[in-house]
Image 1: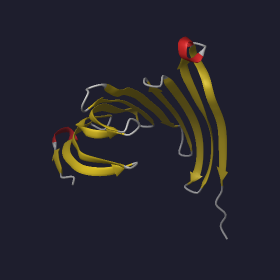
Image 2 (image 1 turned 45 degrees about the vertical axis):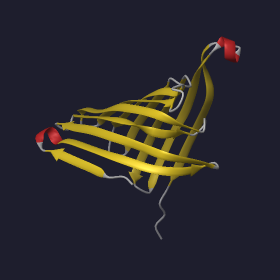
Image 3 (image 1 turned 120 degrees about the horizontal axis):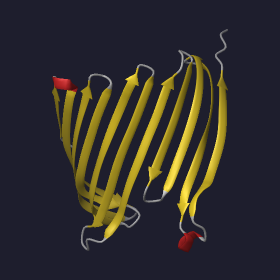
Image 4 (image 1 turned 90 degrees about the vertical axis):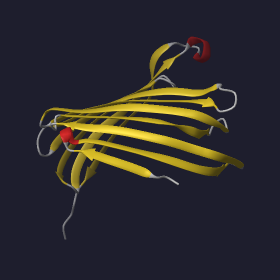
Length: 194
């Protein structure tokens, strides 16, 4: 069951919605009853060059790795900035934490910072740079991509993924940021007309 309410205002194209969910779930042989969550979201489009949004969620959710019910609190902020017509900067911050419903023990806490820089150099050529930091796992991902698109079915792109981790001397036997995984890729796609 998930009722939803949405309100939109004309001023600065402001929108707001809220919903509530209530459910029961059978997960990995265990029955969880009394699952619920409340969600609130607010967004504002301020003149096309700036769009902001935020959300807050609270409820009783399954902490799936611990197989217990948790009191979960999530919130997030997102910004899309378009300083010039061909450049879009997007950034978001999301935080989630859960405490055991019975013992109040912290089950997890995690914050994720994400950003994307997109530049349309010409009609055909575009570049994108995505990065993400996860404070729970102390990881940082960097993903650049260059695309040359003639049409929707004829394109070439080349990119890479770079994953870093902040190692802990006591747990890992080494410390500091180090590259854990790297991948290079490219794709050529061409439309043949018969």
